[in-house]
Length: 114
Length: 116
Image (tube, rainbow over all chains, first blue to last red; front, top):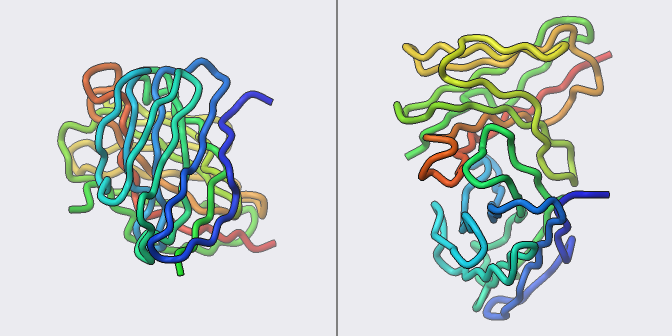
């Protein structure tokens, strides 16, 4: 089925460990996004990529890095995980500038940092 | 600074009745508004949207109303069904199609429970 695929679905890290969250979309969308969801905070934008070859910071970028590997793939890296990064992470894609068509979200990665 | 706010963390309604979910925003540059629905262990899914040039948009049981002067939008679900039980997020975009790159700002979410 067409959509956004995120891996892994669950992960437990120790403080200081690193990991990369993977995201791939097969809808030929130009734009891709990483959000985190925390209780009472809604969805907050970490980083986005308006098109292949470009990335930019969102609302809460500290502690994260991203790579837009190609048009399909957009990865999120935690270099040194902290308990404050315990969250559910969602990747999304959309047509460039066409927020009115809505995002397509992946099913999320639940990350726990102990 | 929360630019999009959903002040009701939860809402409980009886099956068949109307559900009204509310959302307020502060950024005057927002010109497109969307509602997303999220079930547990799934990603949010797009539900309905409205442009700032309109004040109402309907799609089946779902209607979104926009009051630009009050910077307020609401989602009406009539009649409510148990399958509507989910978290609902409102979201806003400034300059869709332009330099905003389609970035969405989300509210905190409202948990809707529809009782049979």
